[in-house]
Length: 158
Image (cartoon, rainbow, N blue to C red; front, side, top):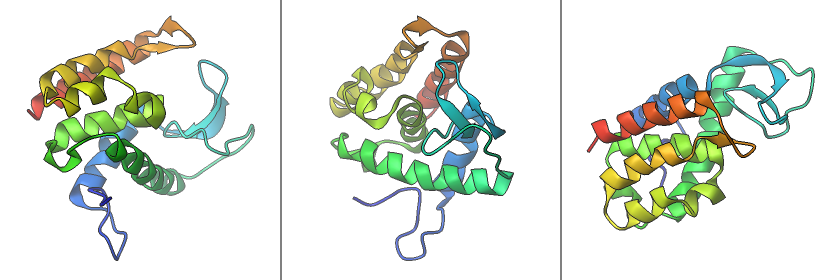
């Protein structure tokens, strides 16, 4: 499946890819030193958890590249569970990608958001983003706020 974030042969980020890094990077926040997140998972940079261990440090350019690379991975997984990903306008597409990056692609693919998007109900899909506001089974204010920002961004594009 084609990526909307990177150009085929060169692998350079598209304008949408640059927007994805900016939007999702802002949602995640930047931490240059590894830390345990709210449920104890070691995390660094823009919410990266893959291969992160205590005591690791990164530069902003390393974190930016890591996020761009990982977003393309998450985009591939997200696209696999959407019937017509190229028909989704940019802002909802990035809001869905932000959520998939944060909750994981398998959870996104089983979500109300994916079901509603596949049924052609983008407004309902955007509204359903706010349902995913828990970590470790508890509602987290930071996630409530983030989901509202993602919902608003999503709705602004339909």
